[in-house]
Length: 310
Image (cartoon, rainbow, N blue to C red; front, side, top):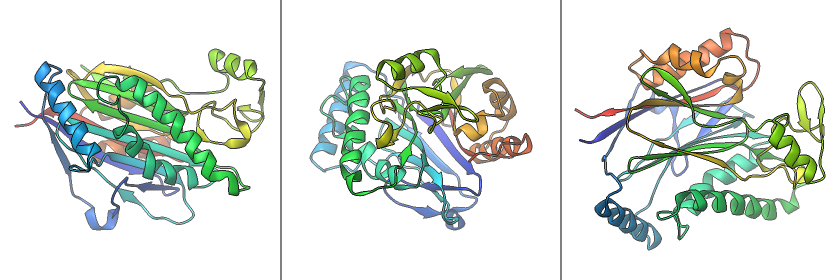
C-alpha cells in the first residue's frame, strides 16, 4: 500500500525558510496541505533496480530530483518560504540554521542535495555517500568563501527516506525526534562543545572550549559541528552523525532548531502533538509552546507525519 507523508512547517518571525529548487511565499499557499504519496517499496532486488534506474535518470538529467528542504537562518527581513517535493520512493527533508549571516544556508540550499544525488555510491552505500558529500560540500563552500572577511556557518539536520529505510544525518544542534507507538525516539544527538567525545575531538585537534554564557568552541561558537565557520577549522567540522531506522511503525518525525529543544524535551514534544492530525497545526503548536516557555532563540520546526494512504 502507498505510504503517505504529510508535512507541516512553522517558524518564528526571526527566521527565513527557503525551498531547495523553487520558492513559494507562504501568503500564496497559506492553508494548503502538501500531501506526498510515497510508494512503499521494500529493498528487494526489484526495489534496488528501481533505485538504480532513478539514480541513472538523475545522473543523465532525465529526472530532476527536488527534495523537501527547509532552510532557516536569521532574517534581515521577514520573507517566509516553504517547499515540499518528491519523486518515487525517495523523500528528503532538511533544516539548515545559519549563523553569522545567510551565506552558508543559501549555499547548502543550492548544493547539498544536488551533490548527494549525484554521488556514485548514493544508492549502494548511502551512509558513506552522505558523509563524503557533507564534508566535500563544506570544503567547496569554504573555497568560495575566501573573498569574504566576515565568517558564517550553518547547522544541518536531514531526514532521507529510501524505500523502507529512514536515514537521519545531523551536523550541529538542531534535532530530529521520531514517534513510534506514542514513544519519543531520538534520531539525532546535538553537537554541543561540552559533549565529552566532542570536547576530546576538539582538544586533540588543538582547539579548546570555554564557558562564555554557554560552552563555546574557542569562546565563540556554541555548536561543535557546522558547515562553514572557517576561522574555527579544524575544530568545528561538517562530518555528520547518521542514524538509520526502519520507517515501519514511525508515526511522525519532528525536525526543529535548538530554540525549541532548549525548552521542550523530546518526550514533551511528542506528547504535545501526537494527537494532532494536521502536520502544519502540529508544527505551529510546538512553536507556540516553545515561545510560551520562554525560548529566546530562533524557533523553526518541521513535522512530517507518516501513514498508509487510503
